[in-house]
Length: 270
Ligand code: COA
Image: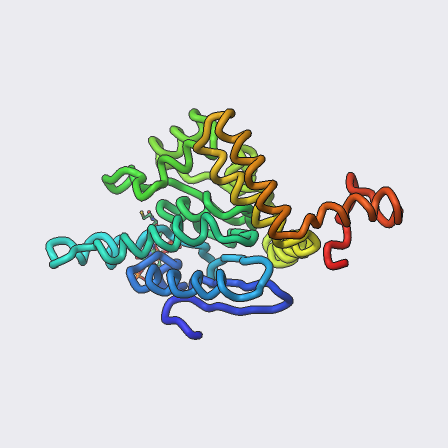
């Protein structure tokens, strides 16, 4: 399928979505939200193993489009309701809980609303030239649409409030230090580092990975008692769905001696 504002490519079981409004630094206009909804529904249903999201040109994503998303719909019938609903759908209804690993490859500017979906990607790797900022305070709004909540979950309170209240941009090294991202690499190595992580993830049993992710996301909202019960229930469900794949894992280690689980993955295709 082709889209107006994004490119979707598939190679070696990895789907890459590239935000493609480089003339606007990949700011998210309403059409981009509609496109992302459809593209993520497609990725959810296809048999790709990993999703990578990045930006065209020198920007990752300059947040919401200040004109087309915020200013133009003011006073129009419906305002920005449809675009906001689409934004929430792709970021939280699809990307956050996509049953496969997701990697943000941050190639440049990353501002405002981009933090919402950066935070819900499972992993983030940035080029050393990337710059991150919660610029909302700089132009008179608050970081909404889940940004404040997600940043407060991801970062230590002082780091989160520094970003939120100063609007000061930080470089990729600082972003890695405060664990906004997993890693920072020289620009030319970003594609290789991203695909390297994707290759590691592709070695794992995809069903088990999907359960790991679901349990992690749901556990964040549970008490310890609830989490213990939920984890047990999910393990039992995985046993049914995967036909106790872990028996293979145990036998390949103890009987075949073909791998060591502390150091690598079992052959889940056997
Ligand atoms: N919304 C709408 N348009 C945007 C945009 C956004 N969030 N971010 C960039 N653009 C547009 C610019 O208006 C400009 O358009 P023009 O060529 O029609 O004038 C074009 O993208 C290039 O941006 P420019 O500012 O010239 O590039 P730069 O390299 O000098 O600076 C940024 C890049 C990202 C630092 C700067 O564009 C910026 O501050 N953008 C806003 C970021 C932001 O606060 N986002 C949060 C929104 S919640």
